[in-house]
Amino acid sequence: MLTPWHIYCDGERLRGVLKHSWLENQIENVTPEQAVKWLTSSDRWLAFDEVFPMRIGEARELGQHLDEMFSPVSLVDQCAAFGGLDRSTKELFKGAIHQAYLETSRIADLQKPLLFAVDRLEAALNDFRAKCDNPAPNSPNAGSESWRNVLTVACDLKAILECLPKGVVFP
Amino acid sequence: MRFQGIKTSSKGLPLDSHFDEFSEWRSWRMQNPDTPEILVVHLQSSAESILADVIGPMGGHGHTVGVLFVTAERYAGVAQDVRQGLERKYPGQVHFLSYPVQNLRKGEPCQQDIRQRFTSFHAIICTLKETAEIPWHLLEPPPWPENIVAVYLALVAKERGTDVLETAITASVWQVADDQIQEIIGRYGEKDTVWDGFDFVNRAENSVKLESLKTVLSMIAEKQST
Image (cartoon, rainbow over all chains, first blue to last red; front, side, top):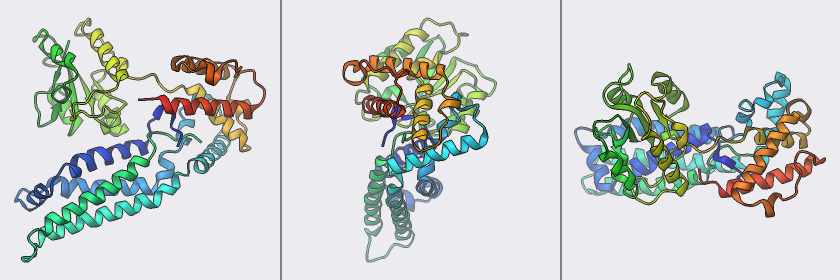
């Protein structure tokens, strides 16, 4: 996908936050032993309870609005040259650009894999919580095993985020 | 002025502790310990709480005159509305770097152009008085060329039957776009292979212009670092 100048957009912000602040800093860097200890300690794991659900929601939002979030349409209102266009012409213009971008970038092809990876990570996190909240006496390592699965699934989501463009996509 | 990592590590990690290859930063910190400072913060938590701690809601007490937020995310991962709110609240005193600085924790060398910007910035601020405006723009890459983008989008739409070339792309927009293209091509040293002899403004066919411009945008995308 063509992203000259890496022009900043909502999609790029979300991609960066999810990949770096969340997956790399708050999941990838946590060992199974740390994860189990933090979730089962009396202090609880605040990031797990408060940040992770928010990030899941943001990742889902990114997936659902992927085409809009990287669209060059946002540039039309930023270019002074188009300031004098009447409203209906501007809308036609934006529509033509957006359609060209969708066809040439094929960004929508990434939507399903992204949403699927988000669902899998959410399920893995829920499983981890369940294993820690209700540890089975005959499976003392179930929590650690479950976090290992979280790491694997998080790695898959990160791989998809790395495929996303790094700024506004040009048609 | 001098650079120094933030002291309250629970609010943000000191950049210099992760950035060993930036030996300049260590020497900056040792200079004139009583002079005003700019904090370089590897943002880990709330930018607002850091600013409230080190600058204060009324702005400018103590030695801290500015705070630069840097992470491996663009604009330190802070949403536009939050950023703009803080920039209004602390006018001229806060800056969120528009590009990511990678490998802050790994201590790997960062890109040459980023190093160059920080070096230039430091050289300038060392000469400034405390009341001077902090030249944050020196840390930033040039803005994207609006006229090239406008011409390109108009050509794309024209190809699809929506013509705004006549109404929006005036002679001066064409000319500025052409100048910007020549400057970019010259900067990348590709004049011979990409653009040599092509008269962008006067070339008649829009489809030719579009294809040529697409070539240039692809080259920019390939060569850009930030």
